[in-house]
Length: 157
Image (cartoon, rainbow, N blue to C red; front, side, top):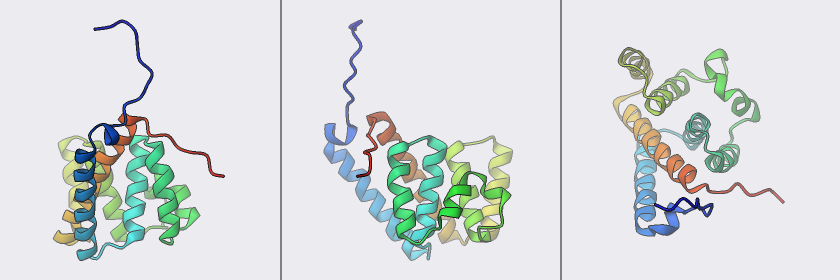
């Protein structure tokens, strides 16, 4: 192994485009499942933003905050999203989806997982619970690709 460190980032999506296309294909199937379960685009983008906040994915945050605003999400709710439990700005269904998203992303201890999943099941149907879970799993994968690849956030013009 060379002692010389390289600073050139490897963009995983460019290095293995077939794998990237497969992940995007999964993303499309997951979006179809969410649509079929009745999860609207605004909620999907809210989840994408929250997951990306937890993971610290600047590229995905930049993209999904814009997408959330386009879907009709308010700047106020996006601003308080990290503290969603402390506000009354979110519906019970959104709170359940956010709790499940945080649980799947953070993978807490068994007791916490049981509590959060139980809360989510009180407000989400089986189809909604499954669709949200797949959305979270897939967004976590996208976050990890962008973080590992060091995808840049471009300045707005």
